[in-house]
Figure 1 (tube, each protein chain N blue to C red):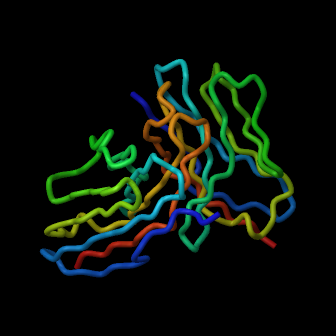
Figure 2 (cartoon, rainbow over the protein chains, first blue to last red; figure 1 turned 180 degrees about the vertical axis):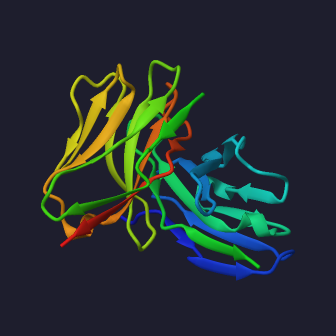
Figure 3 (tube, rainbow over the protein chains, first blue to last red; figure 1 turned 135 degrees about the horizontal axis):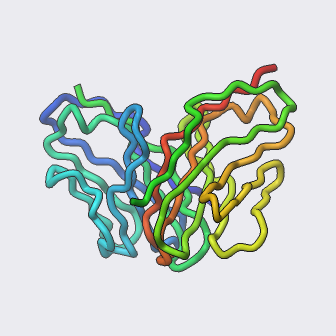
Length: 114
Length: 116
């Protein structure tokens, strides 16, 4: 069974540009989460989808971040316009709904904003 | 406040020795879940072990065991017979609510170095 996949693995952009990160969850997992780790700090929650609905977006830092999950399959996280402080590793995770099974993480996208 | 604390930023351990990685947590919810993840240098986050707050026995998965002491709010990871491939960053994490779909909170991590 394929795990959570993320694309791209790395992205280097200039301040003010736009970047879109993609996450493909494990097939059958209705829960999809985005997390971010800024250098030297804890991994922080950004938002949570159940199928195509945003269940919790309390961790989204500001309105420059837009997440979508059309059709309840893959998700995208767009940063527009990117700022220097957006640099970090963006992780996606998925899990089955209402299960004790853990959240399975993807390999992350390392975003560098210059 | 809901929080995970990992007090060991780094550890060096001789190969084949047992390792204990410390983790304490704070939550006011009576039902919660505790996790450990491993992040090797390649960057992916690998799930290792899970402990539910109402589980009577400590969780075990192969060489990994979770030393769960509820009264002390600690959830230490024990790795038996360490191997060179165990060198990685280890994160303790908590789902601090009864909602099994809820977000999880991470500690800052412990970087483990296994010495040959």
